[in-house]
Image (tube, rainbow, N blue to C red):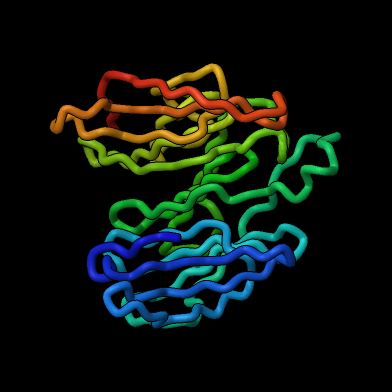
Length: 249
């Protein structure tokens, strides 16, 4: 589920994920308690995001054979029809990965940049893909990878992404992955640039989630929850760590 923003802040968008990889996707007007749009996607929903204008919706869906795609909608005009559909890159997998993990390929997060020009997709194969919404047919413009030897199903991969505003026209994004790090990426730099992917927080286990605080309101700059993977330990436990210091894009 996701709340609308700005002009659509009174809207709630929800998706379902059935066992047969089908789904229903609706937008509700919470002021009137009614469903106002049923979107035309029929695949299973994974994650969704609304841009900061409140006019554009992106839904990551999963179809047959674990094929994932992005569907974009104009919710400003309450249009139920897909305006763009983009096939996502195949998930990477290390040879010899256990067969019981074949269905665990997941999109963990999707998030628009503040100006709606870019969409970040956090994936279960420990990568973060960046799409330019002006040229969606060209595939991802950047693929950032957390440095960890993982295969699909071994961990949760990159679980979260969050754009951060830079001070010098920079375009930064944070991601938390299976290497136990929260990393800061600059989409203007190449993925292979040694200066990219700066580690701003490091834990001993996979990142579960993180939150940026507002230091002007006396909040901690960065709070991170790390997870012991249930795949490795048989149980899932977590640890919360607070990090000081500013995080800049």
